[in-house]
Structures are given as structure tokens and as C-alpha cells.
Figure (tube, rainbow, N blue to C red):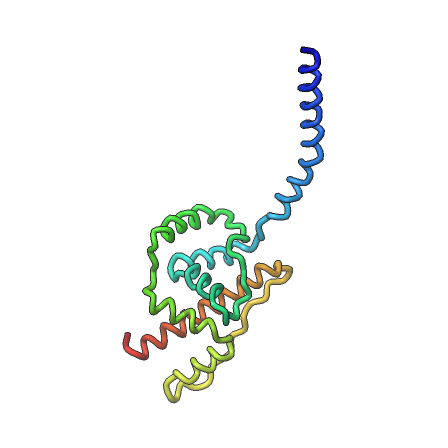
Length: 176
């Protein structure tokens, strides 16, 4: 009986000692998985893009295409903060297969996102009616001290919204 109790005691000591060495490793793993924290306007813009314009669907299609030119941001890597419940409600809607745009609209945006911004600007200028005149070139914002991941998401969302606007303009021109 003493040998059994001694065996259990040694096992308990070994488990306690082992957990002391693995606990810091587990804490480091959690720190490495920390979410990227961006400003609230950027995360709200991401929600708006996903909820109203199927950004996640377009993003996934772009990521799966071999010829994509996207930066490849990982949407799950961003802290959603106070907007987390809104994103959680989106997951339920997306898992049911509901989309806000039809497949041809989604494909149009995917195709437009395959172009760089200069090509999209050139295409837009070609579509403008004669006599539209000169337009000022608006400069995208630069946020001082912003994490590179936030800048990448901001650039990708700008590209998405531009592609969405140009695709909509083309559909209107075609009478759809």
C-alpha cells in the first residue's frame, strides 16, 4: 500500500512540476495569437462591407483564385471589439447561404478587384460621358502609427469599395 501511495505522490509531483514548465509556453502561444487592433471606423467599415456587400464572399473568391492580386489579409486576425456581436450575427446569416448580391454581381466585383487601382481609374474615366471635365484625384488616407495589418485591411477595403462602385456603374450603363 505504501508503494502505491508513494507512486501516486511521485506522479502528482511530476504533473505539478510539468505544468509549471508548460504554463509559460501556453501563455506565449496565446500572446502570439493576439488579434490585431485597428481603429473602430476601419472595423465598422469591414462590417458594412461584409453585411451589405458580401465582402467576405468576394474576399474568399479572390483568395481562392490563382491570379489574385490581393494582399491576403486574414479577416479572423482582427479584433472586432464592440462590434463583435454584429460580426457574430453575420456568421449565422452566411452559414445559411444568404447573400446580399446575386452571383453575377459578386463575380463582377471579383473581376474588377483583379485590376489594380490605376486600371480601375482608367476604366472609370473611359465610362464618363463626354464633357465631364477634369476631376480631382482624391488621395487615400494615411493613418500615422497604424499597424501594417490595419493599413493592409484599409487598402483592401478601399480596393473593394472602388470595385463595387465601378461594377455598379457598369451595370447601370448596361441597363441592368
